[in-house]
Length: 195
Image (cartoon, rainbow, N blue to C red; front, side, top):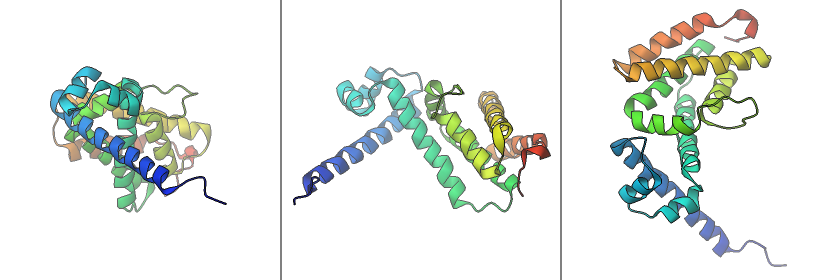
């Protein structure tokens, strides 16, 4: 019996995936250069494509922002995977450094991702900040609902502090280290953090 998936459909899917990645890369460059409040028309114009192509791959602006948020989450996750954390505190510090580095290196991209995905609705299963909170809870081995709440609050704290810091940024490493220490000091022992 002949396979339902032939080589052409596999190659076509690979082409679509590659095209989507190319579009995201172009949009990142456009947002980084021109700002986070661009319209879809401006994004398409500056990236050298059409709005219909952007809509075909991302549905709408929120879909494009969500895709950018996934990219940013992947950057943060990879930086954590590449760094071996000696302890839970070290994992927290590395994660915050990765988050701050993204914001410091590309404030417009950071804000573009943040605009569409800045809510912590309990029923929301995805989103940039929910994903980071989940990763934080996982890396610190936080237990139960209280652990999840602490992680969400910690991300809210980091986000608010980062927004304030971006208004007049200093050295990213010093800032990230300071807020990492403050957060670590706020972790109640009852949350079950494992060293």
